[in-house]
Length: 174
Image (cartoon, rainbow, N blue to C red; front, side, top):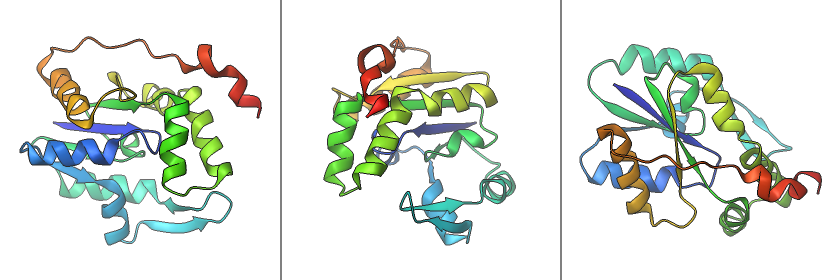
């Protein structure tokens, strides 16, 4: 089984993935895989980010990772042929602090905050997959978020209703 672990940059995907690895789960880092296998097709100067050839990445994963159960971590993971997606979410104001701490530009921060408010990753995943789960990482330590993810797998998880738009619509027009 292949499970996408996706979400807007800064929600905690990488940190939670490390915990899942430490707990004995297989986790595939899509960003690392893309760089190691030359799937970076360019660089977006405006956004300050690498452009990934998702089609080639997807083909590579489907060819080389066919055995066993594992998580696929990265904000593009829901574009792969996965069984379902777990989308990590974070309150936009907390997300802003996290991305600022990474030294991101205000333009890039605002773009990602707006994507989180508008559920961009979740909507993309719903267009491609039948099963989507959400985990709110806002007030959880990473170990708790990892517990939630494992709860989803075992069928013991009460999914929250996450709607940042109701709370932060005003941020969309800054």
